Image (cartoon, rainbow, N blue to C red; front, top):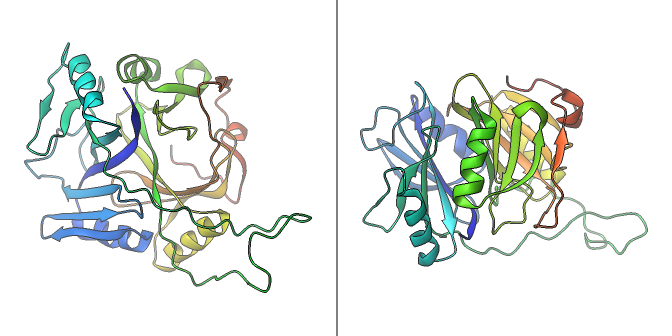
Length: 301
């Protein structure tokens, strides 16, 4: 099963207009818009699909209020869809919709879906970092453009709160082929990547008393874009949740903002890359293993 990463995430929200405003300020492009729905895209076409929390067409919610309803994972081919359908139908309902998307649920009740990847291959942004002593990446006589709009390139990962991390991680590993990159001791958290992705994690399972969405992360080019994107959100009146800073596990820069969507939204850059040669590490669950540095340490509980 060749899973590439997040192709779409569907959210059920109590305040659709607030969610619409947030994602526009966050830098996502409008997709289809209507009175009862609001779709948004990153540069590569991965989608955030926002619906009213009471929309009868949504998958069941794991909790009340605003939260994630379904994660759509992109696969390489129809053969991968067939393999997933055969595996999951052993013990749970799986159905295919009119567009050829497979729908089911994981062991915690979160909606999961699979489709042949629709994300576009977009050329990477140029590396603007000038390292002392090296050939400049930013051309000579060219300053940084601090007014350039920050547009997230893709969804990076989703983080779910689950009561039993080890049980939940086994489902994604054993049934869908996810790889474990790192984990917190005592079943506090598990970092997982799709089998066909080299990003350190595309799914993070974090122990929580109630199931729900912790956050969704979005790739931007570099630390400057993390900061400038966050500065813009602050100017628009959105409240920070955690950061800015840099994680120890995954090495990525981050800045999380509170959102009206049931979880925080993160701008992130410069994540570790991993393949099957990566050696899984175990970490104590403590603040110094969460952030190498942070301007504030106000992580959501």
